[in-house]
Image (cartoon, rainbow, N blue to C red; front, side, top):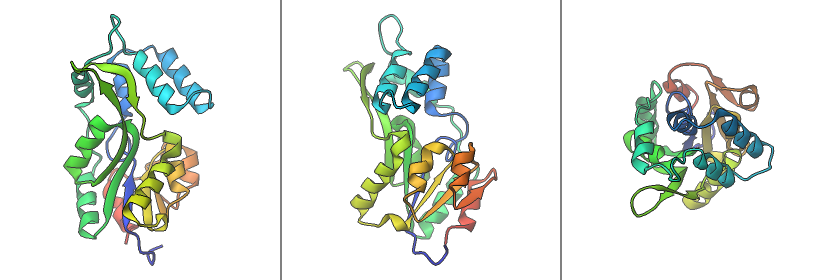
Length: 219
């Protein structure tokens, strides 16, 4: 593996670069979504009954109160208390020193991904988002950029954009939603894997609190 000329390192966000639950879990808790409906929406997506865009729209409906969607400022407020995983700053800094291009591919939200990328110095972002009206309130329209089960498509897009083959990409993730990335890159790393599927398909499995540990496997 170390003889491969790797050039790009792509990270999942929730659970990989930042600690804790996903953006969506945080927002459902904040807006007091009905847990049964949250679960049903997820199951419908995972069973292929609805698209990811439809899943986003249905989840968004759960936040509607008094016939109005929340203001974007409320979304930002709900997501403000995130915490970077240990070693995140140091890892990205060292990867950039070694000449790597870095990216985030997440089923989470661009509001948070853009802030994380800015703080860490990550160059490319693929994330989902909301569209607001002229007063800043969310609407039924969503920006569906990353289907969690098809993150590999975003890597293909980045590969084409950079004119760099996927065989020189490294993917770092923690759940089954990163599987499509793992299958097409030259090297994949499961960082604190949350399920057996992603661990089974990983070239390297790291169970350590610090993301800095990945540098031992990246030339």
